[in-house]
Length: 573
Ligand code: AMP
Image 1: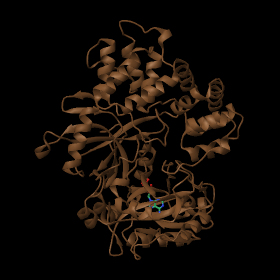
Image 2 (image 1 turned 60 degrees about the vertical axis):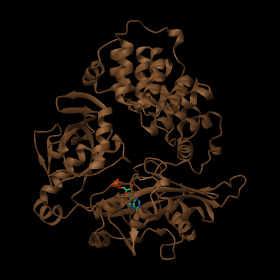
Image 3 (image 1 turned 180 degrees about the vertical axis):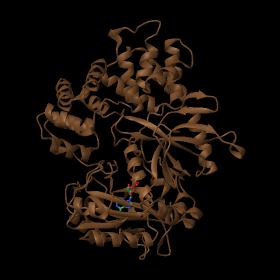
């Protein structure tokens, strides 16, 4: 792990892309297949491959306790070090630099061993057991290695290494084309597996594994109809932007599973959809949205919220909030496998959307009208900005949040905010923000951490900047649950205020954006309110200061109209 950490330090120290790729490629070629697997996964900034649903489950408090104990220092030492760098790995290294005794270099853990310890920490139950394993590992690491062990463990590598660059390095190291590495990466969802296949000249053996979720294709925000037509035209496909829960449906033999946008198995929250899918006569993967649905109408997200996070809902709950699966894409399909070996499915990721839609329609999913649980997304095509604007108006009249506009020739790009899909949202958007601080509330909220300070990402400066504070929007149950989470993930307590680990994403609605010196961003939101928690989004996916600046410009122009016509309308989610 020391060698890997030195490499990571060097990659982080150079800004030139070509130099980063060369450094990585040279390093990767030296490794055995066994070492290559975790080395590549760690370079993606994660302890486990992306398609792997495990999470280490070691919070700030446990890390802090272990580190301060090893360094034989005071409880606040890690918080103070963190304040200096805002980088937990670096803060751990700084604190460990004052250890009474340096570890023996001959006992330094190898990369395969570190991977094994991560797995053991994940599998251990309880903070004490996890902390003990983590402590035993950290005790053997010199400061540089400890820094990177923590960075990988917490998923905050921050060495300026994008996925594309890692793929380019794997391609260069093993003399493969980047396109071949990229495709294998999409199929396996595991850069470690992909690197080993590349090393062994077996990229064409990459197999899509049913019941292993693959990353979702994402949409980029778009401004106006004219811009969308220029980017995706001459003909675009337009679908309603459904306001439900994005889910990938996997089918194999008699088995069916649902995965959320963050690749978690959510099958037991929607047993009726899983049950309906079990009987379907094919194997494969669909992409779509789970919606609350009754009497031929999609119900608002608020209704669906009652089902969120609820495992094994009772028959009564299922009847009160009936759900359906609206499919809009098919990623793989093949004949249904029997009880024996699985039949390989045909991967459709690189096939144009026109063909994928044809294949999806050919599946003849049992619709709600037929007593099934499925529907297909409503699809129309547009050939001019005027037509697109008209369709947008109609969608809005149906109280729909907006539209998804897709290039009919585009392939499915897992995990990418590609340009094949654009989302056309209402002008007065919501912002996805990161909670960076919390405070106890007032009145009946005294005793719970209900006041959130939130931030957006300044992409130019590469840091999070605060933009506001909000109190309302979450239910008491959500506030209670989040209070416990924030208590375990407090970085520093400053009186009533707690600086917290920046990982919780909330969606914020507001009436206006104004310039203000009150927050680091230089902006403040008027009447900010929390629309919902976004556990499906990571800190990397929050909105940027650059988006705020654009919205500020746009909203100024039509502020009068927007405030009266739009903002008073209750939030649609
Ligand atoms: P956002 O959550 O604002 O980033 O918007 C993108 C999301 O819109 C996707 O992740 C989907 O959950 C959702 N969505 C709704 N309708 C569609 C559709 N017809 N096609 C693709 N994504 C959709």
